[in-house]
Image (tube, rainbow, N blue to C red; front, top):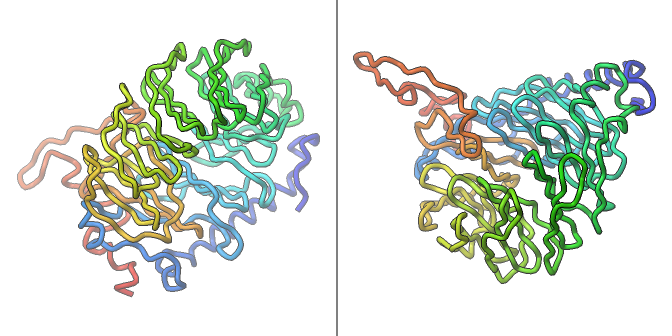
Amino acid sequence: MIPCDPMIPCEESDEMKSSLRLMAILAIVGTCFISPSFAQLKGDAPLPTHQQLSRLGLERAWWAQAVLNPHRDKVRHVTIDEDIIYVQASSGVTTAFDAETGHQLWAVQFGRFDQPSFPAISNEDSAMIIVGSTMYGIEKRTGRTIWNLVLPGQPSTSPAVDKKHVYFGTLDGSVYAYSLRKIKKLYEERRLPQWSMEAQVWKYKAGKEITSPPISNGSFVSFASRDGSLYTVNSTDSKLESETVTEKAIVAPLTTLGNSMYLASEDFSFCSLSLFNRSLQWEFTSGLPIRKAPWGVDHDLFVMPDRGGMYCLEPATGSRRWWRPDLTNFIALTGGAVATSDLDGNLIMVSRDRGETIGSLPLRRFSVRTGNDRTDRIYLATESGLLICLRQIGHNFPVYHRYPDRLPILPELESEEGESSNPEENSSPANESSEASDQESPENQ
């Protein structure tokens, strides 16, 4: 298969497109024979049973299998938004699932086989993925590539997007901004990817590698560098507005919640800055370097120092609510419980207010765990692409944490005799009946 040369117009790569389409079709057909039940018989991770989950107040909403070759590929990234789950394999195939039903929407190969990639990002209409030195703009519901850009440097972060620009950082410490309007115009004129540089708006050079996807509020863009500095520049012309310097490298991605931005450094400090003027609001000292991304969800802030357990902080003041030395990762906030992981890979449910253990479940083989700050759903995956979605028992409709305005308006149902007016009480799980959900588990094979 001949890869598409970025200097050759895309119309001349029909052979490549046909080959990729054929490969994707064969891969999709192949997944028909890699159902979770079949995978379990072959020694893959068993699905948790109804009885196991009910002890934690949970139920299995659905399961699905991503498109990949389990003999050579592994799941590299899982990205979550309100609508879609993106599972990116090491081969370059991305599989998209409906977040609530588990229905596979599409599976597409981006770039060449086994190129390095970064987690997908998305907004309400589109998604963007960097594979190798190319950025792909994708139609969310169909997987259709709507544009692709050849990047001027080796990327070091996922892209970030606002209403006007898309941004990304590179290994040499540069941050680039590209105009979305210009990208669309070049695409309509069929001048992409060979004229990608025409869409570049500005470039800013920091001291060392950019370690975190840029964050934009529309007027200013902030990004962290391995040189220990947080830079904030004007989104229009890249004029430096402020620079916050720490004693050591900034490795953990930046996080936002409400009107605040949170910065973690290897100098043991974790601080809150105003998203508008970058003034210091408070500072928390962990005593250990922080290299994992902190998670801000609803009215809670979760911080995981290296070998230092998990802290739950008050976002407004930085005061400590609770600390658990045995926890390692935040997974989701669901009702009055927090889904977390421990050192042994178990799923641990703890109370939101005090951090006390509600229950645990040994799900070590579901080792791919991405924090979900968008909804109250729990998503877990194996390296071979088996994906499960867990939710609170009877909660057929999700809670939107970060963007509650995106929640679809549900019709009000009139109460009839023998039926509840609450649609949640009259709905069944998306892909599973509550009583039959154990039939796929190995205990019942």
